[in-house]
Length: 115
Image 1: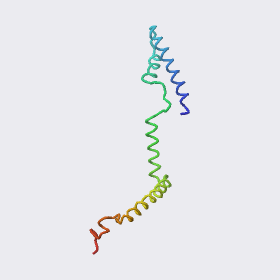
Image 2: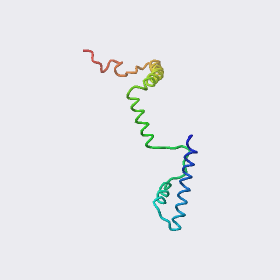
Image 3: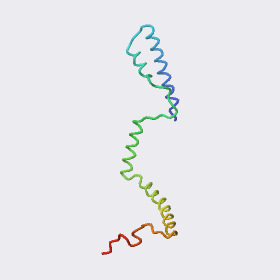
Image 4: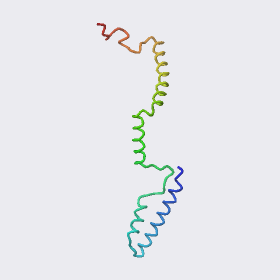
């Protein structure tokens, strides 16, 4: 990702602050900034090339679902139907070539309501 170098630099700065805070603590200096610096890097490894933020992904998913429900992806649905129509036509031709009706029992006259 484009922002990885920035995230690595920020992580290195936080790591340096935490190391400095550990040094101060070793000399007996205690302060609120020491605990904050240590907490900032606690359980955080070096940033990975791919950054995954669960909250950001969840927000993006909600936004796209709303757009889907509002009909902004109508072109996608139409394209899907167009492509699938070709597949179904091919399957229908194959069934007819085998002499089998796709509707099964109804094609043989069974189960129809001819009142």
